[in-house]
Length: 321
Image (cartoon, rainbow, N blue to C red; front, top):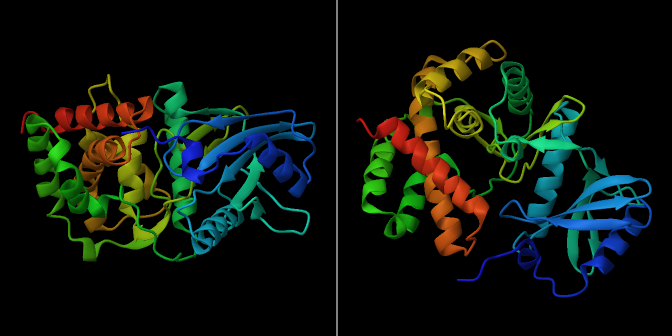
């Protein structure tokens, strides 16, 4: 199966430089001096563009996104910025719009934040950075907006659907661990979990430490109205996963619940089931990587990273069970 590249996602075969020239004119940011495609990610096509006026990130939306999907995404980014979330500022076109169109391609342009994600830095957040991340999570979860539902196949509540899609690709020994995580998640009383607006993807790839010292939250593409602990589960299972340390996922979920609870109190049910929810999140990382590799053709170093992270996380938690 062929690897699906960012250019494949927008189904564009022409000179991308022409598109970049036109979008820079549309957003009145000056003539592009240089640009390159960002290879990380599975959804849209992101470009870093340098002009005399500054450095920008252009997000060209995948062809599978409908106009309603694009409107949903841009509305969410606006809401996040209005709520004070640290997210790149959106640039508007000459006629005041956030979304632009060039050659049938829909896009947005935003400031480029100098810094590195925790995936790029390959390290855990410090205590101070962890507090800043949870502050951002609390801001996100306080956004008073219920967006149209978006089907995120990686979202933890979809764990059984994902299992059905990828189980034939998973090794027997790994499958034992996955089924154990699924069985534990089955005990979570979903209907009793408080819901709110969640980013849903506070991963190592989407949390950036800016050169200005601030923590930035990237990529709201899978934001939904979901159980609040979904936010905390992803943070514990992914962003705070320590491949070399002795802390267990249960230890991490207890720490996250305590520190987030100082900002926004959690219910008794949320505290009790955060660990099973986060464990399911580890299984979803592992299975989601199988989906990308075997069903979508994304056989990339990023996919291998998520698969290894998920497998190691499951082994760390469940090998002795």
